[in-house]
Length: 212
Image (cartoon, rainbow, N blue to C red; front, side, top):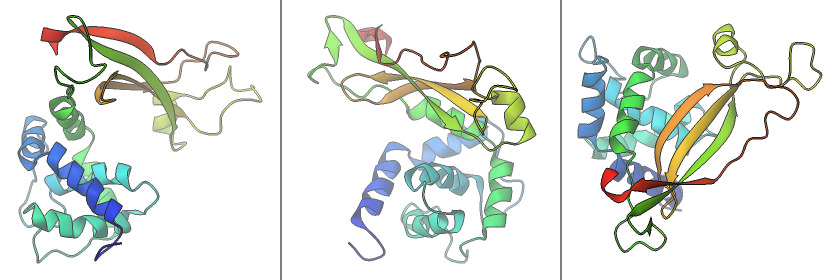
């Protein structure tokens, strides 16, 4: 433990800060047209981008707890004004809706790159960088929008094995040596009959060394 919380919290946020610099966040916001419409707001877009990423680090915490964890770190990044207060969960929800997903997708495309170097063990096979295709699924809230976008696992509405929630399917390309994810796509579930949820994972693929 350290002052203010577990050491692991500070390590996680420190890695986030080094991997995702403020300049990259601002660029992603500008490119996607999600800049703040007014000044002086408690939750400007760049704060919400870091907040959305922190939700992945602290998935068991609620909105207000995650925001409180971020406060001290954001001050150190010059991303938090001392006049601001930790917002309520309702205010955070509205700010997330204003932000949308586009800045995060753009930011991911900027920072998700191969990190293995020439001498990294297992990174290359001759002129090729070793990569892996993987996949997993997330349950999504059973809203009409999510049901239309993702659908349910199972063979149909009358299927007793039909899932309780819509499922979002994620496919990633990762670097074998470092396990760094360099590309990802999220799509809906496509039911193709019993057993269709069993798909091959960890398939090895290769990229040209100069093409990364």
